[in-house]
Amino acid sequence: MKKIVLALAAMGILAAPAAVSAKGPKLTPEQKLEKLLEGRVAGKPVSCINLSTARDSQIFDKTAIVYESGSTIYVNRPQNASSLDDDDVMVTETHGSQLCRLDVVRMHERTGMWYNGFVSLNDFVPYRKVPGGS
Image (cartoon, rainbow, N blue to C red; front, side, top):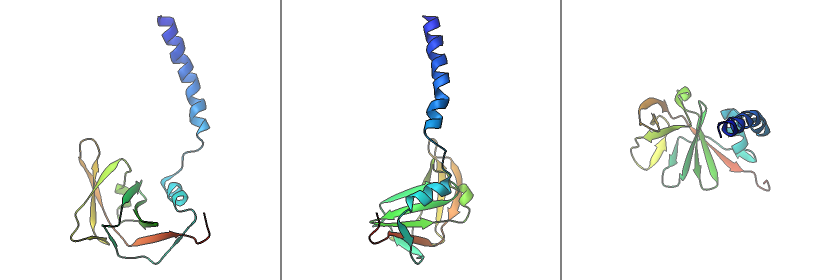
């Protein structure tokens, strides 16, 4: 039995590099953001977005925070972006119904909610689908 377990473990180790290489190269956070924005065009930056219409948010490590609002995607490249980690939880204290430039977002690690730093939001750049595009 011990030989079977060792043989299976060895086969798993040998197969692992093939599985990893089959996925292709790992994309950087900037490349992931570019892929998300494919087929969209940037609009004029705005200083605030309405929280009531912002349905989803996503962190791109050390790069940006993306907020989805209907068919529009807002990209915020905050100050202190080096504190952004897609495994963290964002805690935002707002004063009203909008999320605005200069608002502070605190980053907390997901499992113990330990403080991991903060970012200060900049302007939000709206990206909309190109008419007639995919």
